[in-house]
Image 1: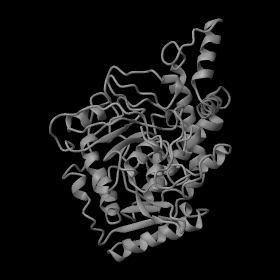
Image 2: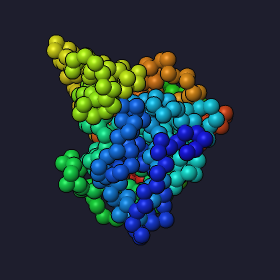
Image 3: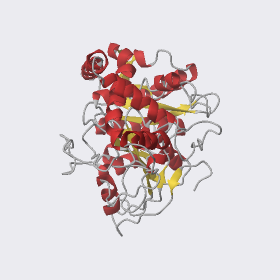
Image 4: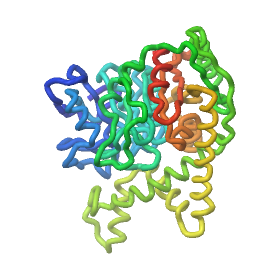
Amino acid sequence: MTAYNGYITDETIEGADDGPLADKTVAVKDNISTEGVRTTCGSAMLEDYVPPYDATVVERLKDAGATIPGKTNMDEFGMGTTTETSAFGPVENPVAEGRVPGGSSGGSAAVVAAGDADLALGSDTGGSIRCPAAFCGVVGIKPTYGLVSRYGLVAYANSLEQIGPIAPSVEGAAELLDVIAGPDEHDATTQEAPESDGSYAAAADGDVDGLSIGVPTELLDGADEDVVETFWAAMDDLEAQGASYHEVDLPSVEHAVEAYYVIAMSEASSNLARFDGVRYGQSGGYDGNWNESFANAREEGFGEEVKRRILLGTYALSAGYHDKYYKKAQDARAWVKQDFDEALEDADVLASPTMPVPPMKRGESLDDPLTMYLADANTTPVNLANLPAVSVPAGETDDGLPVGLQLVGPAFGEREIIRAGSALA
């Protein structure tokens, strides 16, 4: 275990004797199934659950020779922006004392930032790889939806989430992406990237000469002053290396956070229905009829944030409210996708601060969920549009807190964002 509580389980899983990751340790987020090693999703509901199979990405890590040193701490079922909602305790940011590491893949980012793993896997539903990468000063890639198999990932919101790499450098993250990307017969949503020439790692050449970068002004409005200042300093660095930038408009992102949470919570209310103490989850042997037994199991097994999202999602899908909330959210999602596609017609990538604020103090946002949700304003639109994005370290605030820069590319444009990001990290 670590002093900052980065791991839930530190049981080692050995990979093959050789392969591209034979000399690497790769920590795995605890919502990704590992055969014979418990997978808790950071929840008391699954505290003793041991999967009988490996997720496809874990099979690929083992075939590539990686050693998995443990399962990393996370917000319960991936629901959170700070990794403070885990049933196994909060994670401390190893590079910013007294601050959160970001979430929900906070344990994965923390173990990489602390040097307790060479690389790590996280999952990103609304920014859950990019947010902790930014707060911990490391690199995180959210792949295009369908590039990486989700088979074996415990579902939170199927239409939004992707598994992706976290690493100290863009090249390291790209090397891990080379191993886990590609079609999988167990996941019908996966597909081959249209342009499959060359590895992702080879794209990390730092050559941004002639690169056109669009900067959505909406994603800078309201951001912390130090964050904005650090962002523009990084953009000046890219410009000095031959890139150019111009402002673009994404008017739909004003409604992206609302649309994201309606869709994510609706899918969560459906996906988590199976955790009732009978089909999955802890059973307390409660008295009463089946309805009372299910209610007791869910009351004791789920934390407050999970209960909040299940209730809100159930309400949004209920009779009489489906068109008022869920349908409108899907319409907004289509608008966001259209806005991104149009902006990327005149730019190779789009750039913004990954998070509008520096790492929060521990406990600061727990009593104010709305503030926590709004912190995802720059990352959730990318999941709605199913596009790839990378967060790279952009520098530090005057107080020495890490700031991340997000680069968004067109669908299956991982090589473009890797090339651009490698000019900074």
